[in-house]
Image (cartoon, rainbow over all chains, first blue to last red; front, side, top):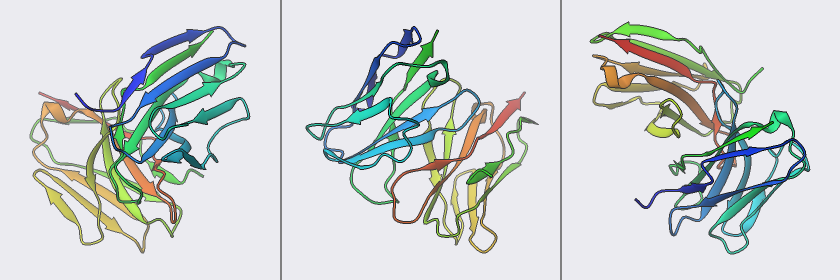
Length: 115
Length: 110
């Protein structure tokens, strides 16, 4: 279908490696969000883009986390020098336009395991 | 203290039962409220928005009490397919990001 697509679905990396997670939002969706979901917890906000502008990165846990959306469509979340506590499901969501009432559509997520 | 608090459950109920979930939020300036549903190892999906006047969608009724900073979800005539985790979600003032509760797990048994 034409939903939010994330890749890879699963990623296993050794501690200290860098990883890159990709998100393809629904075509035409202006807003894009990244969330982190640890086991047994609700998703936690990481960062938000409106088109190519990163408007809020207050949820990024450390400077090892970096996100970009250079052309206002596909986004990449990069984690440098991964740690075991980075193991989680990383969810991407998009919404058609700006506004708190806009529904956010989530992708299946990338399940990241750091050994 | 977490911004959005929910009883994690699990709630184990028989088919046909009525079950209610509650949630409290700490930021009085919060502007939008939702219930999301998440199946095991799947992505969250919007179940319904929540309004002060209360709203109903089939067997589901949601209610918001701004004075008490309290949100509820009522499920009538539970089905086996209702088994999932129900996430209480709030949008703070002047932002579009979602703040999720831990989720309440519901298991409906035959």
